[in-house]
Length: 447
Ligand code: NDP
Ligand code: 2IT
Image 1 (cartoon, rainbow, N blue to C red):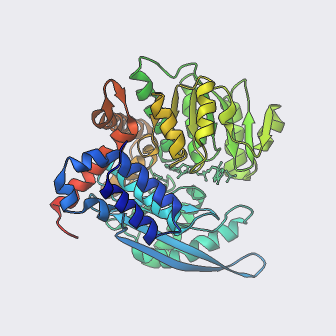
Image 2: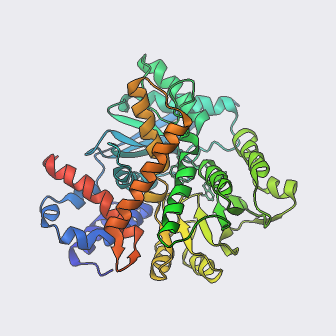
Image 3: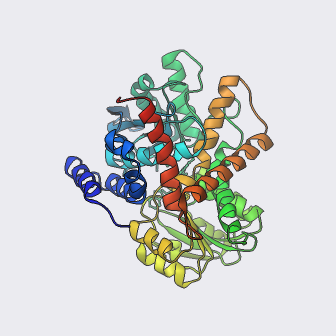
């Protein structure tokens, strides 16, 4: 898409101001390029400098996290919370614990979250936080102590109507438990200001499953636009964490064949397909024993490819569910050569700019993360609703609402992304999300 001088100026200024944040530049460039014709056709947005305001966090909190490891040595990590935009609701977004986390990573994630949350139909602003703490190889006690040290600062900035974190890479039910426990101790209140909580203490049914299930619901909607279905499709999935596990679970349940899973060391290729029994092994391996995916290949006698990603295998659907920039232009070419008809992002920004252009140019179904993986934060929003009502809905109830939300997100993508019989989901998701936040910002004045 042709970009204008004003757009180039905004992007150049962003890079000059924040030179060390390449992932943030990437996310902003992707969004602004795709919405620019829409922004230009609405001079009110330019007059109010909505775009310039949208790419500047409302607030970014940076703090030291000092804690003592199991050997009695003092460790110092960096903690962050980027509160990006609260025009349509309190800040909401996950916490990520991973050694690669920087302020730039969290700004890209918070920016994506603002638009994603706007798509969910729920009143949620956008934020992201976390730390460069590496949970790998840490004992249970070390993880608990780290979470407590992290919350000793972060608790001041949270609250039901202020900011409500959830999980992300390295932060699951275990970590949310320790974080919430410390929050409760420090504030002396039991409030809903976390999502992904345990089922006995305010959690929602289906939250754990939500991102993966929602991803498959979205894929089903996309396939339906072409009179196709997921039944019997061969699917390559990357990652083996929360999103990957439940995407696989749902895909298997609707008759698809999942042939790959991965972690940061390599991927397994199981041409017979991962069935329920094998998936139960993955859950136990990853969520309880915290082992490596290589063990799957040993146990079920299939191929393991160390140091590789799964995009060279023959599949019809590819679901990147691990991390950002894990699928590049060459991977995209390889997937297309092998007959791939649909790619949907379970992770945030897993596809590079080149990969996305390849998919869109070749007019295959491509579902961007802010639409396709919005199921997780949506059920996070439903958890907030249940907490404020003092109720807990049934599994069927939450699942039905999740399906409705994914369908509504899909419709918004179609409404704003339809281009002569082709749905450009990137354009559709970006315009639909942007429009909602931009209108709210306009109506609330210059703040
Ligand atoms: P988990 O921590 O549960 O799992 C992450 C998985 O991705 C693991 O298999 C991990 O392997 C792999 N991974 C992480 N970092 C890298 C890396 N740098 N290179 C290769 N593999 C990597 O996280 P989630 O499943 O929750 O999150 C996965 C993705 O989905 C992220 O992009 C996240 O932002 C996104 N997401 C998550 C949501 C949620 O509700 N949890 C909601 C929406 C999006 P290893 O164990 O070796 O590190
Ligand atoms: O990227 C995401 O949408 C998430 N990690 C979920 C955030 C949340 O607050 O549940």
